[in-house]
Length: 193
Image 1 (cartoon, helix red, strand yellow):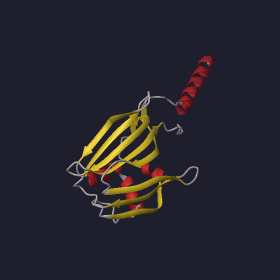
Image 2: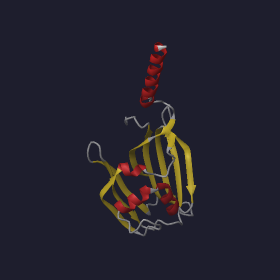
Image 3: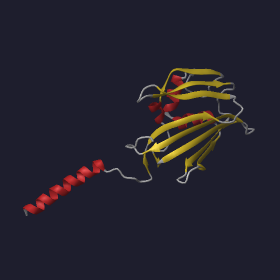
Image 4: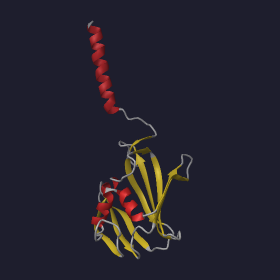
């Protein structure tokens, strides 16, 4: 009888301990977002941005730079997003997720969630609603990159390396602004490579 009690206690302790140390390798789950690169692609440059990642300390990275709107960012333009992933044999595979929607300003604000308010405040937009008027908006202190993780995106997704191409187009399908953001979705305990 004593032997059974000992086995039950050992089994209980090992199971309770294994749950806290279990680091599974499933292909999807809750993730940690790590931004790697941001750059522009070919466009008319009517909506311009010059933003960059600045590694200020060993543990702190800030988004700095400016946005210049030659035309207002409003709901007359179209938002076109295309997510590519890095294939296991090497190379980008486009169309992992495609998002094309009218009313770009309002829908971009919904997608960014709390990040919209953070960017509006940091880049000194006149207000945090649509439309954003013509002008140049500069971030004097930058935005801590950790504040750019609170997006209205799925909280569970496939782990891996991704490239998001975002184009803002007019009704004539002319590209007014084009941006590429490369990032990785890592397991919460993983470190960037």
